[in-house]
Image (cartoon, rainbow, N blue to C red):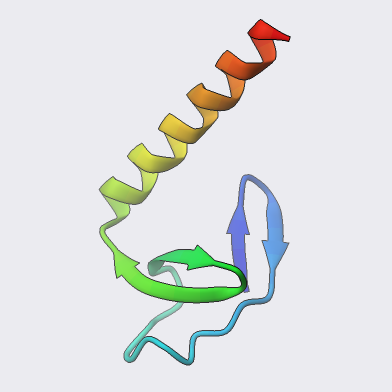
Length: 59
């Protein structure tokens, strides 16, 4: 299970070895593709939220 902005989703971790609860992963179409640094994960989520907010202001 992963949680992104309060949304939980069951994904496959078959492509990654040695994951632990609390690890950050890059997810695409239901698969964890890579384990990523928590600082990078946080920054990526912040950028996505900024992009979403920018799109809302243009509408």
